[in-house]
Length: 311
Image 1: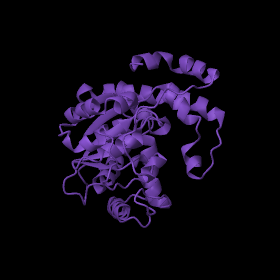
Image 2: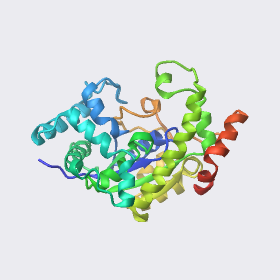
Image 3: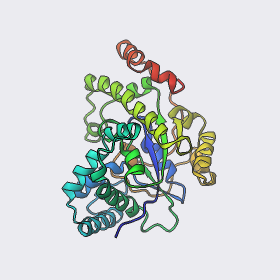
Image 4: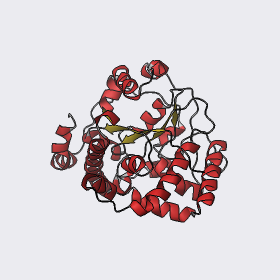
């Protein structure tokens, strides 16, 4: 049975920009279901080795178990294997889909139907046991190989996509990268690989260019630009903009706006390690001092785009 897709709040941009925080904050609203980086769903469905933010492994989490069972049935009914679905997803969500959208090239037409069937099943599984949820948050961003995911969800899967381009000042991203790699930090490894910082700056530029392109392809009515600095400094105004964009009441976000710890339980297996903590809206951090070389690279690699994004 082919499933209809719920509305998707897609958080695009680069990592280290607050996407997990925004995902969880949005999920406080009863009409919205936080889900994390759904781009990794099929991989996790195969491996089931990550720990959900509820404290259970995905193999033992009741929520994810039901989601995996639902998608498994859709794969079986459509005659697709999990490996084939993963391969089709990687192809359809590559940055080439953005090129196709801009030029009219239909290079993924043959795979669009199978891609759409699986992704609608994945997203509908997130709300199948929720009475009120009208939206699902996908904080997969627009970096590297998944740069075309939000456009593919709209053009190939037929999902209503509300695109939130979340951006953070590159100097702050560098400061975050200099504190260590997220995956390594979860294992207690605080070592810093400087080449990853340079790679991160290149990634910041590419991810935000892909996000700008996605916004144009989806149309002005379906996209909004949110700066991380505005989210932390002016949360009431920022959530007011988000409420108007999504057509929702902003009242359920009042506690979050006031900086109170969030009490609602969420289920996220992929994203920043903060998903395992008691989350609250962070106060704006003081601009960190970063080494001169990295400051120079920020200006060199990110300067024009940084200006375009309002910095």
